[in-house]
Length: 180
Ligand SMILES: [Fe+2]
Ligand SMILES: [Fe+2]
Image (spheres, protein in one colour):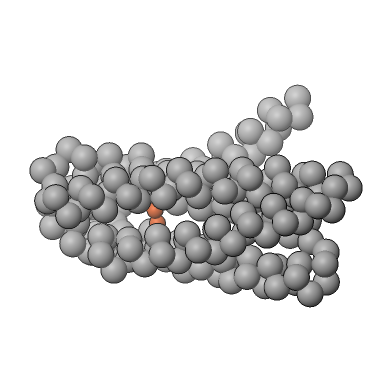
């Protein structure tokens, strides 16, 4: 029985959760402004979300599977350009998350001046993600499906599921290794 779910469907569903986290970042930014205090527990949870979910699991499926398969195809100029932008934006997202993590650690160790750094990295993520997601959802994911046969699409969807299945094991193996 042919799988009728498009391989980009799980990616688009994941975008909705990332958008909700961006909404929480906006609330945190307002709260830092009004209370003059950052919620480091929330920020560390947000960092873990961006690293494990948005980057490893979500960007991971995009870069290691979808984009890799796309690179084997003869892409139009426009699609090649968007693909390069998307990859670059993932790199920028990673470096902003790292910056946010470092700033939150400084803040947690008593350096209240790091609140400004926290605000600027949160602002960068708030600006980056919705635009990135909208580019993928509205200008990329649907048109690029035409480069793939139905078989290639259902094969890709299977690989996405397998990638997700392994992700949680990989994550918690790393947690144990980190403390061993
Ligand atoms: Fe992406
Ligand atoms: Fe995405």
